[in-house]
Image (cartoon, rainbow, N blue to C red; front, side, top):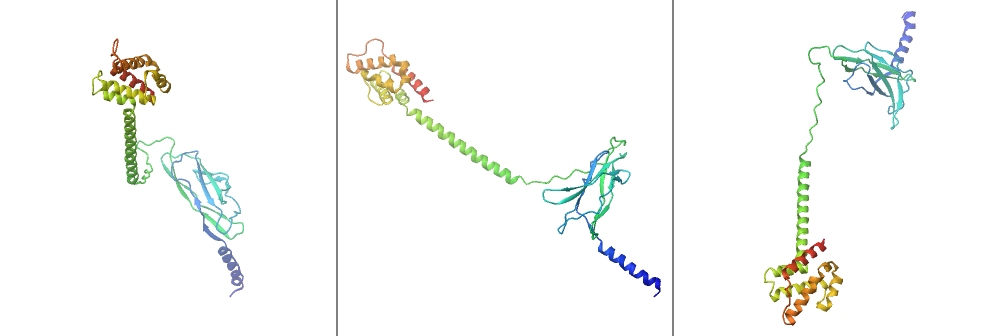
Length: 285
């Protein structure tokens, strides 16, 4: 072996070890969206500097410069997110406008770690740039629409139908019960029952007068005579507007059953009961 070869061998071995020590690693990159740009827009790349082992410390950040006829790199910056990871953010600005829709490449580049043991490789990325004004006679080629994801709505529609039926049944049952309760309550009222009984007999018959007497007794909560009528108006003051007709009814009833018979124009029992039922219904509300 010559002296020259002997001296060159250690130099080559050292260079080999240096290259081997500096490992190239594909970077984790958030590339920009690949479409929808015009002149003046900013295009942003984000490179992850935090690895599972340690933080990557660049020896130098990419320089501010024009990288091709379309793009100019602006001042990069390092940002730290809420999860503690560090990102190198590099912005490119579009400085030219094509005459037709054109695909432009963000250049590939690399950064080295300060320790000299690692090198991150950032790959190129294509983006489409549109002209500000179309100069072609035909339509510009467009990026195809993204296919919408299909969502199975059958279970949701079945649940809506089921709960709608349950709601309708519940409302119908509640309304039915409310109507039945109101009907039962109204038909159990004293003058409502008396009016029903009057519909089956002549109003001059003793049974008609007795039915109205029972309605007065139930309203007052006691058996009434003409002398005890104040108890009725004390318990049911809403009957006060018809006090004169009620007193005349009791006076004629007393003459009818215990005297020589009614004197003067007889009271219309059915008309009086209708009026008292109207007042009774209004008081229920």
